[in-house]
Image (cartoon, rainbow, N blue to C red; front, side, top):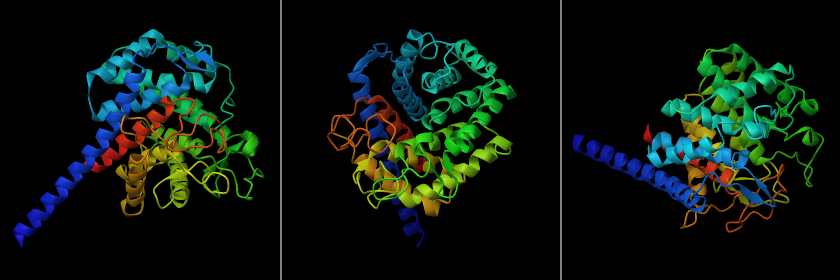
Length: 367
């Protein structure tokens, strides 16, 4: 009997090890594809017009790359990041006077790289945040994507400096978007977010159901965990964000399809019945993290994570290209039709979402 138990334990350990290896291999493959295709991170992007590589789409990729580095410490990941940050002088897109959350997204990576290596400078980030806080306004985040792009910057800066002003500003801005923008972008009763003031009720899909955009909700879900992970669990801010994280988790669990995917429209399949990768990856990111933190019951959410991984694995082409990636936009209709072979207008944020989801799931498997 004892030998049987040992054998079973060994088999389970081997199975877990194989699963971990598969997840890491998938993350490495898609990242290698990206780094090869965009070998010079200083080069601007060109989708209809030229944009610097510090724009939000690329910044999300670097969030994913830093997450990958945390579980796969290859120096070339840091070198690639440093070359990019050095070129942009560790400054937000459009300079330190910007108040646009999309411009500020890159500052998350500046902070994380500095913490990981002790290199780089955070002075431009501090200057930028100081200027925005000095405006006295907390109503800049008029679309929910902005919560992911900017809130973790302020919260991470608070964690580094212990300057309460950063956290206060982040929370005041978050509450404004949540409770006041367009009458309040968070539908507490349903646990899901309207994308911006133009989508607050009574905006509906064609079948009469509410319009909740998958990736938009994914941005908020990611922002909550990226903020909570650096806050004391007993702090008022943590508890406030935790409450919304739990509401979202419960709602999102109900929206997952049997194949493991979430679709572009979370509660309506009338017009967009196909899988969507980015939202799926961000929801895996949040749920896997929540289980590890003891916030989500493993017996309830682990099956959802396992199914999401199977879905995300099916998005991966042999060369590392990612399918089912919805292009940029602000609602389920953007970038349609989304297919396994369709090429989105920007690839970088999709790769970032994928890396965030897979690396957090990898850590869940490794426990």
